[in-house]
Length: 228
Image (cartoon, rainbow, N blue to C red; front, side, top):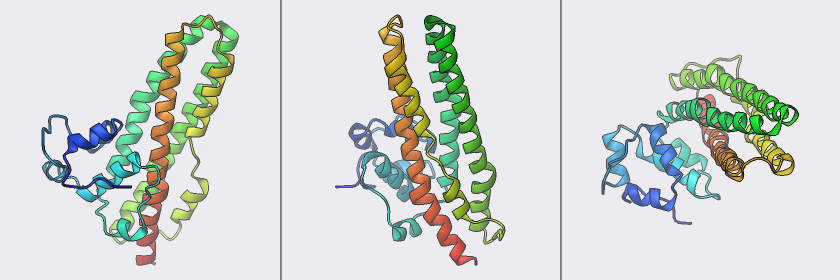
């Protein structure tokens, strides 16, 4: 496995994995970077190059998990802004897009099946919101205080680990409902587009969870040991 490096052209990374377009937006990197390499683009946009490469490698190589030493030596000052941008993308763009498809399908399949789809998705959205609210209101502020040397003795990152659920699993359940029970009267283009949207979001959420579990958590554990 050959990981990405800072001297590679950023455009070459995108060619290798088109999904990295999503990471560019979350880091605030605009398109139009021409032939510039990763290091130059990151400097231009005030982004720690090692963090950017770490995220790109997580997204692109299934077996890549940074070790604790690599995490300790990486500038993670932009990690929380990146995670917050991911939350915003999911809540304001991807979920509404999927919901729009579901409403269109619900109108085609009749009240009973349509209600099942919409109720399931409504419950999922509520769980999604609770999941992200906990991170944004508890976990991220706790980490930011730790970075300043302020330790809250009433909380530990292990509480996050114990409660951290894989929210992408419910999307797999939704996909199964569509596979098995979607009436044949629904236009194939509508159902296929819905499934692809769900699969793309499921994959993205899996990487998001991996970043939190394998980068955020070890980093915070290091800070906790430092500020006992």
